Length: 202
Length: 202
DNA sequence: GATTGAATTTAACATATGTTAAATAATCAT
DNA sequence: ATGATTATTTAACATATGTTAAATTCAATC
Image (cartoon, rainbow over all chains, first blue to last red; front, side, top):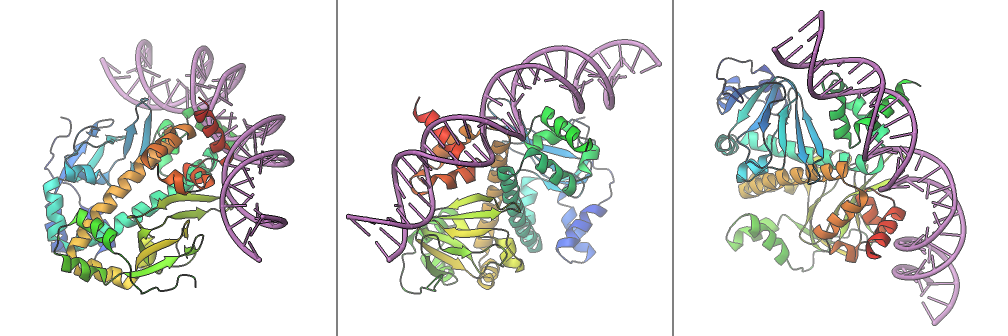
C-alpha cells in the first residue's frame, strides 16, 4: 500500500530531541504539537511526492533516507538534497501555494516519516509562535548554507567536492548508491569512479 | 566618509511598494516600520560588510547594485548573489548570532540602501507579525530557488547557464562587469568571452 | 541458489573549460 | 586630455570531465 497512512505506534524521541535543540518547552507542549503530525512509512524506491503535483505534506525523517531531485528538459536527473534521520524536507512554497513542485521526493531506503498537511502547517505556524521563530531561523541558516554550497560548485573541482562531502557527511556513503552521490556532486558516475580510483590508489 | 550614516532625506517609495506586494496595511503602519531602518549610501567599489566580521546590519536596496561573494582558501572569489533595486540582502544568521560572516558585500555602483541593525531586526520580528510572516515565506521561496540554481549548476553547461541568466536578468548585463558575471556563473572570464563570441557570431 | 537486472569500473575518445600570456579595448584618476 | 590601470579578447596549450561502450561486480527476485 503505497504511502499508506500508518497510524499505529512509533517512537517520537528523535522528533522531540530536534525540537528541544531549538526551543525549551514542557513535554506537554511538544506532545500537543506532535498531534499535528501524521506517521507514514514508505518502501525502498517508493515515491513520496511527485514533481508536477502540489505537495500534500511536508516531512520530518524519523528513519531511513530519501532524495530530492529535479529532472530537466533534457531528462537529466539532478539530486539537490539527501534527507536522513532528523532532517526536515519538503517543498513548502509549493505546498502552501498549492502549486506544482519542480522536485521529486523518493525513498532511497525504507522510511519512517512524520508528515504535516498544508492545513496543519499553517495552524502550527499560527498557534505555536516558538515554532514560527525556530522555523524562520532554520530557513535563514539553510539559505546561507545553500549559498556556500553554490560557491563550492562554482570554484572547486569534482574531486575536491567529493572529498568535502566525504568529510561532511561520511555516513551518506555507507547507505546511498554511488551514482546518486555523483548526481549530487554534479558529475557523471564514470567521473566519480575515476576520482575514487585516483584517491584510493595513492 | 565610508559607510557614513546619512540621515538626510530619501525616497522610500520602492520600499513601501515591496512591502505592499507582501501585505496590505494602512500607510501609517509602513511608516512606523520604516523608522526601524536607516538610510546609508556607499560609493562604487566600497565595502559594505566584510567577511570575518559580524554583520552590523541587513539591507534593502533602494538604488544601485552590489555583490555578495566568498573568497576560498585558494584565494578564488565566488559571487553568490547580485542585489539590485528592490532586493533584500545580508547575512542574517551571522548578524543575529553575532558571528563572523563568510560573505563579503561590496557596492558595484554607487548605492542607496536602507539598513536595519540586529537589535531593530529582532524588534521588527517581534512587534510586526506581518513582517515575520512575510519574511518566512520569502525565505522559503529563496531556499527553493537556490536549490533550483544548484540543479542548474549540476547539469547545465556554462553556455546554457549564461543564456538562462541573460533571459532571467537581462538588465544585469548592462551594469555589471563581465568577469563578475563569469564568477557568478562559475566559469573563467576567458571562457565567458569565448561563449559570447560563439553565440554572437552565429 | 540461479537468474536477471542494475551499478560500478574500465577504456578510448571527444569536448568543454581552465591556464598562461599577450594584445587590444575600455575605464579611471590626475 | 593623457597616462595608468583594469577589463576583455584572443590564442596556444593543458586538463578535467563527458560520452560511449564493454566488462565486471553487485544486488534483487523468484
